[in-house]
Amino acid sequence: MIGAIALAALVAGAAPVQGSVFGPVVAVKGETFTITTSLSPNGKSIVSAGSARITEQVSAPRSDLKVGACVMATGAKNSKGVVTAQRISISAPVKGKCGGGNFFRAGGTGGGNRPRVTPPPGSRQPPPGGFRRPANFGFAFGSVTKLSGSTLTVEGVAFGSGKASTTTVMFSSKTALSETTTIKAADMTTKVCAFVRGTSTDKGKTVKATDVALTPESNGTCTSRFRRPGS
Image (cartoon, rainbow, N blue to C red):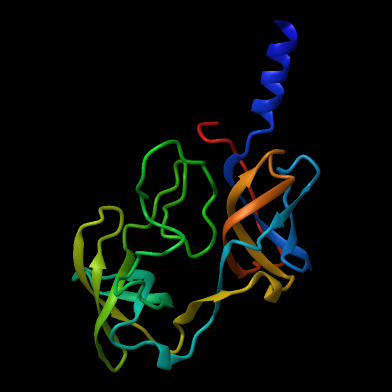
């Protein structure tokens, strides 16, 4: 009986666990890459990304801001609700809609336990804990329905509620524009941050990725976390 219990515990411990890791990419070999992370037992995660969806944030030209594009704008809003954007992320619609295939979703949907993770830069998920956004925080996510000079009309969802909204967004030459592109694992490079969602049987030392989102490093560093659901 004791032997059977020990064997069952061993099998359970080796079962894949869903979670996420986030850190700088320090090595790439074929369809496998390595990131450093202080929360991995050995300080790094070796990620198998051959079957993963990999997206990358890169600088976007002004011409990519056009009617029909999906945008996520953040900045400051005035008393009329107009958002002066500091950053605008641009992406293509998925099956004619914005947000249908996005890696990061505000609030999220779906059943079951979900891993708790630290969202990467550009995520629409609000920060955890006691942090609060500024009172004049401006946010717009959705489809560009009108473009006139340096003014966008964005139809989508309101921040945190998921309710339909229409937001006027102002931008300038100081607004950082980026876009999301899809790349192959073999095309990855080092010196970027990788947010990896997938499964691991060894607490994140090795990860089989389902989704990977790449963003620029911040002063050469990234943070990371890998947890069991509900831990």
